[in-house]
Length: 145
Image 1 (cartoon, rainbow, N blue to C red):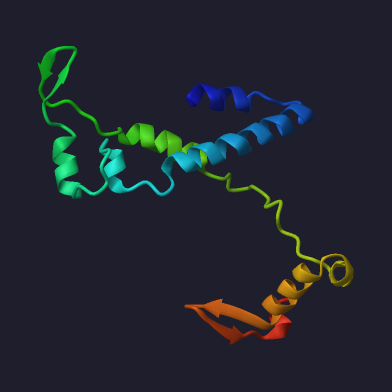
Image 2: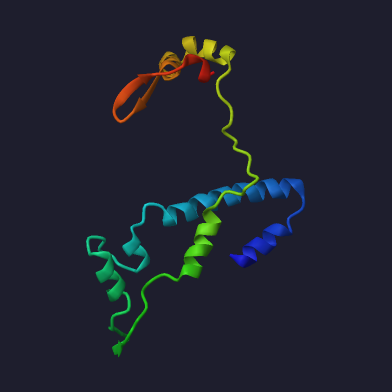
């Protein structure tokens, strides 16, 4: 990972930087998925998430057999350094501009009424209502546009 960071820092040509950013976006998602929705027991190397965490932690260093030999205190947990490297690769840069920062303009919404009526109805409904805890609540219409 450190090598990849060093290589990326040396890319200076604009077109190459844009291609690099596309690849970083792909890998950022990959590394995010490696950590997302994992129970704590996963990081101790457990395959059965139903086992209580204390038992999984203890079992992560239990003796086992490797290559026909008994090995004591085999560490199965992932190192914090490794986990941190994956976490770091999954992070968005602080100065990253969100490419999804645009909403429909009034003119675009008018076109939706004819071309995509369901989408138009959805947006109009979202302007008037918000959902929380399985209920709908009226919105202040001025704050949505």
